[in-house]
Amino acid sequence: MSVSSPSQETQRNSLYSLAAVGAVLLGILLTMGAYGHFAAVWEQMMSDETALPRRLLLMLPGATLAGTAVLNILLSKPLWQGRGYALTATLVGNLLATAYLVYLIIRGVPGHPIGIFLALEMSLVILLVSIRAGLVWPALADANIEKP
Figure (cartoon, rainbow, N blue to C red):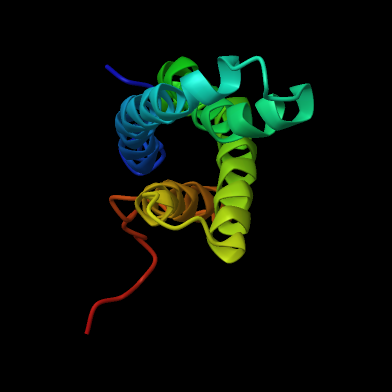
């Protein structure tokens, strides 16, 4: 027999699981995006005529996508388990990637799918911020509220 009553048990916030699955899916898509970026700029990056600062600038978008992808995939299990540090680290990493993608959108890079990656990033960031703000799903039923 359980010592605690059902009203005292804490209900698991399923948004952590949703965020973990979203982080893995976003990680896979960001990995594919980083691969596409590196495939597109590889010849220019490895050219002898390209200066080192230009090479670094060419690598930056792919490195941002790849770094965020690795972070999301590595932290998906602790995020699934509802660990606070995983939520914070995933949120910070994705906020940095989102800020960089917003910068690229404002700067204007024609012919690149930056908007798609920004939309995917924003959806995960909104979910992570909601969890950080205290959103719980499924909603907890409060026994003290009287029903009419």
